[in-house]
Length: 222
Image 1: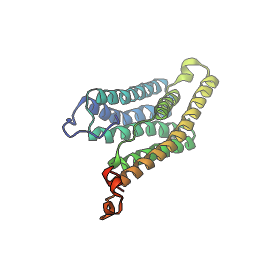
Image 2: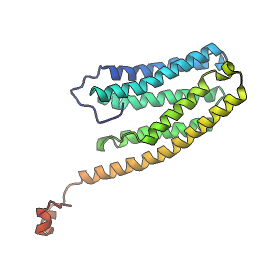
Image 3: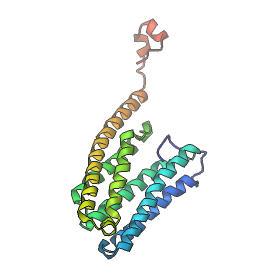
C-alpha cells in the first residue's frame, strides 16, 4: 500500500488498513502451521501454504483498494512494508530452521528487505520512492519461490527431484532479482535524499544581489 504520504483526513480504520493488519496477524499463524511436526505433515504444510497465499494476496488487495478509493494513510504507508517483510522473513527463517533452505539465502534476502525498509523510512521526509517494475517482478518471483518451498508439492506430485529443481531455480531467480533491485533502490533513495536536501538548503543572504539582473528576473536563484 505504498504511495503518497497519507492525508490526515483519511480515517485510519478502513478496509485497506484492516487487510494490512490481517497480514501481520497471519504471520504467527503461518509459522505455527509451517513448523508443526517439524514441517513433516502434509496437512499442516498444506495449511501453511494456504495461509501464506492468503496473506500474500492481501498485499496486492490492500494497495489496490488504498489507491483506488483514496484510503492511503500514514499508518498504511508504514505498516504495509513491515507486514510484507514480516511475512517474507517468517517464511525464510522457518524454511531454514527446517533445513529446507540454505541460511545464506535467508540472510541475503533478509538483509536486503530490512535495508530497503530502513531506507524508506530514512528518506520518507523527502518523498516516497514508488515501486519499480523490477521490484514488482521481484516480489512476484519471491512469493512464487517461497510458495514452492512451503507447499508439500513433493508429496502431491511424487517427483522429489523435479520439484527440487523447479523450486531451486525459482529461488535462484528471486535471489538475483532481490540483490539487483536492492542496489537500484539504494541509488534512487540517495538521489531522492540529495534532491530533498538541496531543496531545503536556505538561500544565502545577499545571494540575489550577487546575480546579474537578468538572472534574477528569470528566477534563477542559487
